[in-house]
Length: 90
Image 1 (cartoon, helix red, strand yellow):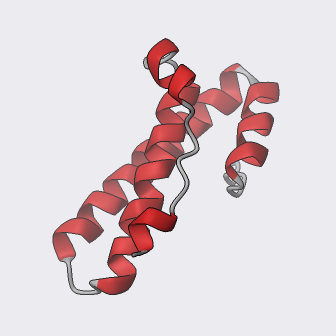
Image 2 (cartoon, one colour; image 1 turned 60 degrees about the vertical axis):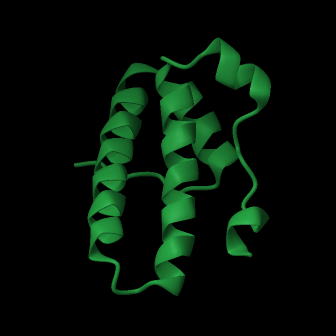
């Protein structure tokens, strides 16, 4: 099944250690976004999941912009590690 092919980005040590950090929250949100995206590929008319995905995307975007303002080096490393695009600057 598709869900089993997803690889978790978060290691077990990070789960136990840094649950409150912005980096950990972005990693876990990215993992949930990927799972929801694969779910929506199979179930296109699941509007509740679409709404949840939009909420996760907005929250992740806000956290990424916060991290880019506070710690640019950590932000760049995280973007490369998660293989996501850099957010547009305004």
